[in-house]
Every structure is written in C-alpha cells, then in structure tokens.
Image (cartoon, rainbow, N blue to C red; front, side):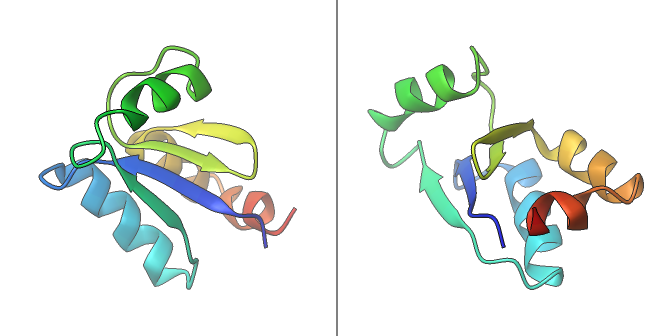
Length: 85
C-alpha cells in the first residue's frame, strides 16, 4: 500500500472527514498538523504546488488535493487502485 500523508489542522472539519474516510478503508496515514507545527506549512505549500488550505493529501508522491478531491476519487472508484499502486 502507498504511504499516505495528510497536512491538517485540529479544527478543520474537512480534515476530519478525510481522515474518517481513510480510516473506514483501513488506511494508515501520517498526519502533519500545520497548526501545531507552523514551520511545516511552507513544506506543505511547496509540495502542494502552492496549495495553502487544509487538508492537503498525498498518496505516495502524488498530490491528491483536498477533501473534495479525495471523496471524488472514492466516488469514481479510483481511490483503492491509487492506494494499492
């Protein structure tokens, strides 16, 4: 399974929704809370090609985008294949 990384903040509802979806699929992920580690926000923005909102989600080295993008992959039936690749 591909490694999954989420950049989040503690009070972000979209972050919690993305984590719930991944947990429901049994996916383990690394979470980087840019609210608690503000120095990591610059890292997030660079990896996300300028994306400054949270969550920013990565599967392997591929930038998925945010919560809506993750749910769109799931709805299109593409998330499982991306996780397994």
